[in-house]
Image 1: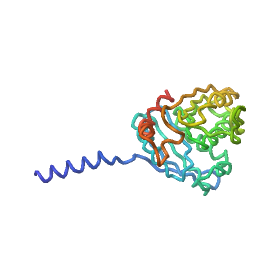
Image 2: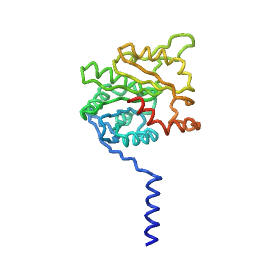
Image 3: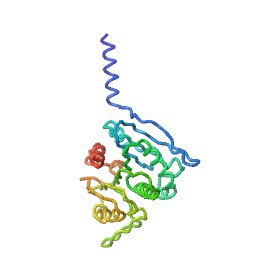
Image 4: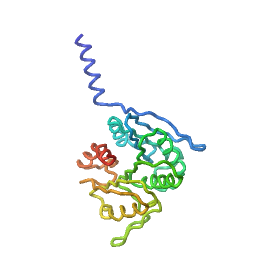
Length: 242
């Protein structure tokens, strides 16, 4: 009996130490292309649609998605790069058809939940293009978007001059929250970015995350502050949604 009890305790400890990610794998067909979709289901009325162009390698994002799902926020993560057999480089974003982004948004909207878009770094270009195209088609309203340390410069900014942004900036009315790292030079242009994003009618709110750099949850050389912020990423996202 004691041996059985010890075995049960060991199993419970292992389960607690290594929680399984409760994700479901689906696919969305767009023309002759199949887009793989990682779904972290939840019973709440909010759905967070992320576009991690990472060939399915997003570890911290999946842990955050699982935590959000446990709090009632459903998360969908389409793998756009693998769908179009593209390498994980910035130039690949231009090769992803905006119609594919819209098809994924359309599938999410059919759940009848409040759909929010989310992306980080250069991937924010993709969701801005998708949101603008969605609105042009007179589709139902999206709930909003979260831009994590967006990298939307058309070219390297020149000190003392107003930055020039890519064409997708300022083309949507979508409510947006911009989260930027306090330890990145981009913090100094955050006011110009929010102004540019709002030119199409979007209400835009910006917040600096203390003591972190951009892409802090993807860094191999993360500081203690960045490790802590990664653990709290779900809380930052929830605060942005509510």
